[in-house]
Amino acid sequence: MKFRPLHDRVVVRRLDSEEKTKGGIIIPDSAKEKPQEGEIVAVGSGARDENGKLVPLDVKKGDRVLFGKWSGTEVKLDGQDVLIMKESDIMGVIGK
Image (tube, rainbow, N blue to C red; front, side):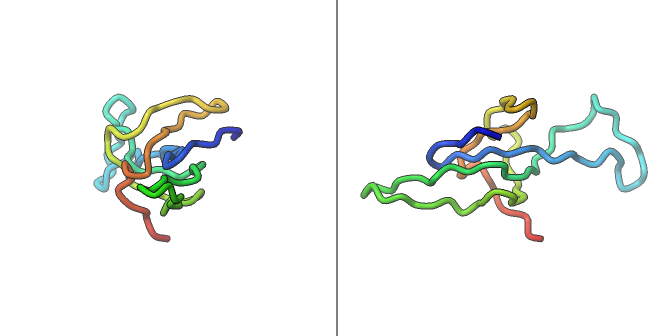
């Protein structure tokens, strides 16, 4: 991908949600909610504090993250649907 987000923004690719419930019921596409879990594809250089000092981001490329339902802006880059959001919209990193 030839896109670099600026400042404290990140590019997130949504991860597919489960197609079955725990009980084995298959969920049709029309009833699925958009997943709130994704993988970081690209990160910006960081935000600047009051003194102009660069503060690096806590997330890095490849991290699996949870984000808010209405977070980010959906765009299409290189044929992929991705979200561009601020780091503050990310709720946390999912551990491995």
